[in-house]
Image (cartoon, rainbow, N blue to C red; front, side):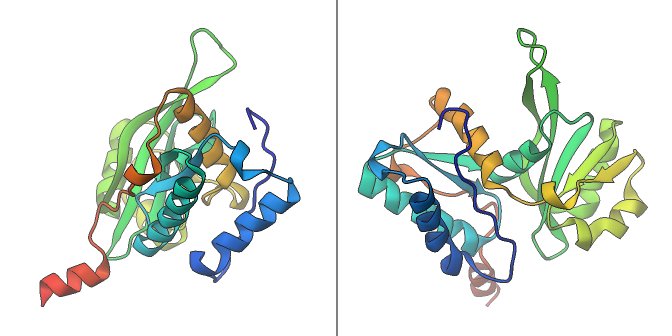
Length: 220
């Protein structure tokens, strides 16, 4: 509500969106006694990310948007993950394991606002993409700046990054290294102020790659 975070529900466990998303939404709504017709917009991760996860999240947001006649704010996944480290120096690099030796990733940094020296704005150095870990490591090294990595790709590729990087680097701690609803909400508020939203019927996620089923069909 404005810039007050009223509720955030985070679980990182072996359950799917189809099992957790609606019960979590219902619990949050009940806890803060939210009247759904009072909201201005619904935000959802627009991708890149897991094909199934994006489909479920997008379909849920779209269904609510159509039912409530509210617009949808599609928030780029890697950009919102970078917001976990708001104000960090150096370069922020989210890496999500995309399998097949690839990651969903991007490069971001924060710069102080000229008019508000105690505020920062997010700078996109590389938009969300699906690339090999070798390629993103090279792009990180080319920045010549220290890099902070976060995301579920870190434990998968930590050793390989150590072999490839030529710049100082580090890893975000556990409470900052995964997707968080609060970071998405904060960025979504900025998007809403800028008019970056669409009617629910027009919302669609950004997959970047074909689903496994589509790839296997094409291979056949």
